[in-house]
Length: 160
Picture (cartoon, rainbow, N blue to C red):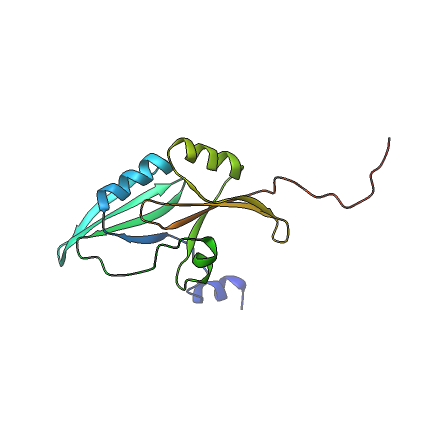
């Protein structure tokens, strides 16, 4: 049996991430926040006849889709964490992440757009990345991940 035969029978072989969904009580405000702060574009907006309290949109942020579902009947969901330690201990989807070339530059640009940094950028050599975090207008945590800023050198220095 060839690899192609196995792949065609494996329903997961073609699996790719499509989007993450955020349910919000303030649809217009949230769509505007993502447009203004993260340069999101609206791919599509729609409603569902059977659920007249909902408004939905696919936003595209640098190739990553975020589905915004606005409802006039919000239910309690994930809490808005007051610290990163609390966010890490809260069950469910805790954050989503954008990969960037320079975490500090991304957080600086967001600061210029009025977005406060939730967790300052720091290097994590044990996993090989630099990360920093913000929150959106509803308290959802968003990570920015990129290359280490300070690369430790532990080998001998060669003199020429």
